[in-house]
Image (tube, rainbow, N blue to C red; front, side, top):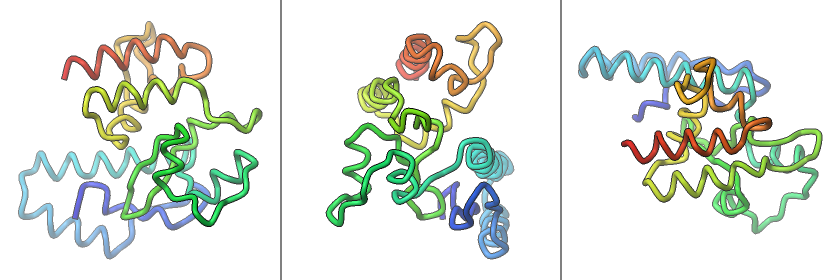
Length: 168
């Protein structure tokens, strides 16, 4: 079990909650680990829930619908990532955070490609990138989240990412 397994993304439309089975498994697993690790797992699951509730964690079909593209039988999750999408594995499913899609233009935000490049250059997993985008950052005057600046200040987000990724 990994830290994201106590969250069930199979329930659509921002109504996802931990399943009893996964919550019980997480609690059992937590009993065998340090309190700090158990806390970290709970907080990570809560972060996925917040991301889903605010932006959606989308499956490939939902991404195609938002982008106005037709699913291709040969189009795999990895091909979607190569097209410049952040893809995350949550609860054993491949999903795409909705914050990276401009729903009005039916396009991926241009800054996402740069973020993926920086993450790859610094050996950051896409899950870590997605969670970093949702966390507060002192790189912004209001110390708010990078995700809040993706559209209006993409260069500032890239600078903050570069600083955060290269300091690790």
